[in-house]
Image 1 (cartoon, rainbow, N blue to C red):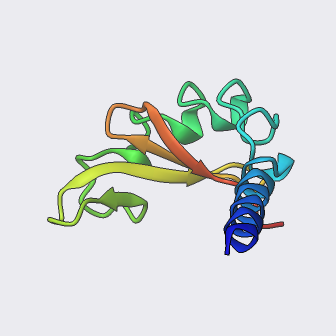
Image 2: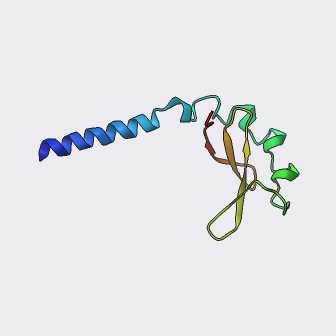
Image 3: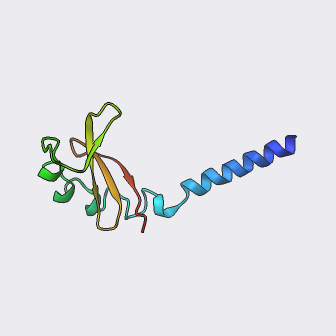
Length: 100
């Protein structure tokens, strides 16, 4: 029983490490980095001042909403395929690595 528990713990630890150690998903990867111009809200394509990203634009198709239906931000896709998620003020709050 003790060996089974230790083996299970080792397997789970290795699985968690493998998931977090994937370079393609890492924020340290340049493609995902906030320091990359393509992911920066200073880039007009990602800016909250861009009408396409504006919370005031009722026709915007890239809004991100909470469970109550409140718009909490917007998403854009970088040329690399990374999907960036920003709050309504343009602060990057997350990303989804490229699936390419």
